Length: 342
Image 1: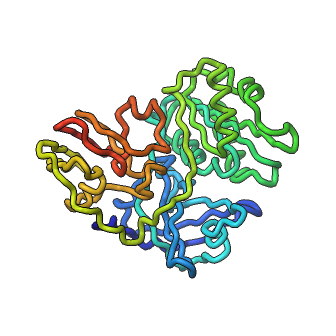
Image 2: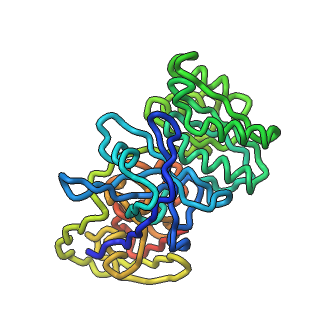
């Protein structure tokens, strides 16, 4: 199995955002490989004395429209090896191995009005969307941001500065558990009611996201206007060599046309071979990270035909209805399939 090409990123600086969170800025030599959309994430390799390395995904808090450097923000978790190592061990001049940006948590248009919900480190991809929308779009942006207390608010100063700079377009509403208690559907619905016609994006811990979904449902917001970003731990390590798959038994007629970076290829597609494996084995550098159906890094659009996904822990029904599939979990159902990487 051919591995996806990773890159070495040089750390420019490590910024302490709060007592529990830090941001890491990188210099990137290959800007084409690391072109990204607001809301996407990086998969990085964290060295480990126990197993060689572990892979972790962290959202990009920089914006491709306003920031010269790539930046991820990491919040420590209790007994979290990756987050604590990154915050404690990295310094300017160090290098970190990473896969190119991936993910589908990004608006289709920055001219749309956006209602953004974040809790804790869920602000990381959201602030990238905020900065991009304010810099390049024409729509209004409303952010509801929940934290334990004011000391836990990541990017507090930056958000306040953006609100001052764009008073007619950007509104920030802070929900502090120390003052208002845990976020609940009724309270969130009251805050969101004036903006129920906006496109909604939600990122944070599962209970918070569930409360937001309940609130938006009570306001009649259609599911296809709500986008969720889930954080999942990776079980596999995409930086380590994968175990070769056993030879597949071909069924003969299945084929797939794939368009990636403007290049179209047509391949025979054995029935038992996952789409991502097929592409990598044919030297097509398709993006991926977890290979488990849990991160959306390998997401592509089904243009024609039908596939079956063996596992899906990240795509919503609306994503699937919109033609989004996970290449790492897809098998052919129809004899001819066409997919495109956008």
